[in-house]
Length: 240
Ligand code: ADP
Ligand code: MG
Image (tube, rainbow, N blue to C red):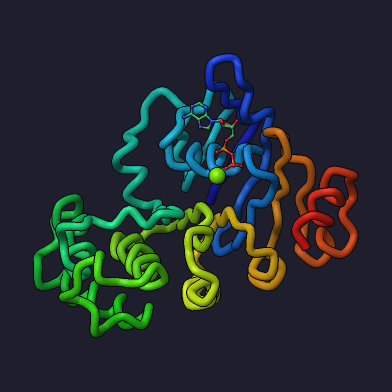
């Protein structure tokens, strides 16, 4: 699904990603972890061209995002993204948040878009909130709407950037549960997270970044139980 080779990203002279090579297979759930400032968000953003890599290649679903001929809008239609701070449309109802892009970008009929949106709201446990505005929702509800909104575009791949970091502790689980269900349904997912429990239980693979370098990657059990590098050991000691 995703192939990243020798990816570099610089902001001015600040080299934020250094020679990242990895891949994510269809149906795989990969957790990206590492200290603050290590380049996790930048890496995720390079996967849907919210950041343009300085060099290297990123191929998503057979499309070379770093090649000469690319239709970024079209590629992005197939990639859902969920952010720490939800980014819902405040002036639209929950249902309208879900139907907006499918109607506008994909040209879906209102009835079709609404029908699918209602199923998705049911799936994230918010069927009764379709007429609500985002401001009336809790953080956990907002994030579940944001996930449903991303799914409304029927993406092949979902990117999550610290989806639970802005939530009150009691709301973390409801969002993680939705993400777990999604993982079980076979969705390909790249998840930047500080939730080590999620990484350990749900991810098929963990990628550990430090100072822009992919220091270690592997199956969660192996990574958490016996990290191979000093840097990973240090990090885990601080967060576990
Ligand atoms: P993380 O998500 O792991 O905390 P980021 O990818 O956000 O790390 O940031 C990695 C580094 O890149 C940091 O030093 C940050 O200041 C820098 N950075 C991120 N985005 C930008 C930007 N748009 N312009 C300049 N520097 C940036
Ligand atoms: Mg970040």
